[in-house]
Amino acid sequence: MEKMRVTLLAAAFIGSGLALPASAQDANIGRNLAASCVTCHGKNATRTGTLDGMPKNELMQTMKDFKSGARPATLMHQLSKGYTDQQVELIGEYFSKQKAK
Image 1 (cartoon, one colour):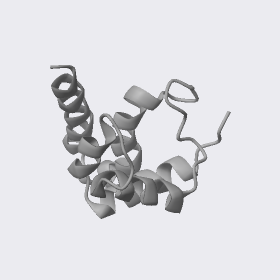
Image 2 (cartoon, one colour; image 1 turned 60 degrees about the horizontal axis):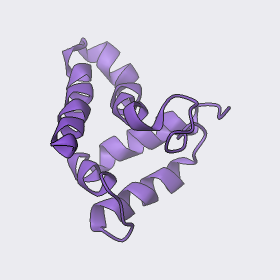
Image 3 (cartoon, helix red, strand yellow; image 1 turned 45 degrees about the horizontal axis):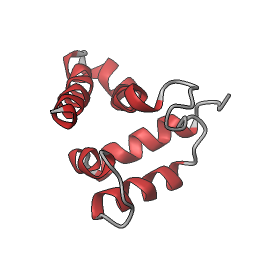
Image 4 (cartoon, one colour; image 1 turned 90 degrees about the vertical axis):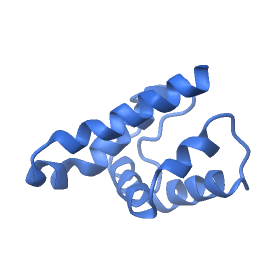
C-alpha cells in the first residue's frame, strides 16, 4: 500500500509539469521532473541523501542501474522504470547545477 502511495505521489509530481505552457515547460522541465525526487531525497536534506550537486553522468548511471536491477533498492527500481532516458538526463542536468549544502 505504501509503495503504491509513493508511486502515485511521484506520478502526480511528474504530471504537474505538463500543465505549464509549452515555453515554461521547456525551460523548467528538468526542475519539474526533479520535484518528484525531492519528495524522498529532500532539498538540501539528508533523509536518503541530497541529489544536489551530483554529477549528471553519475545520476544517470545510478538510475540505469536501478532500472536494470543491477543496483538493489526498495522503491527506486520501480520509480526508475517510469522515466525515459531523456527525462533522466534532464533530471541529472538539473541536480548537477544545484549547489550541495
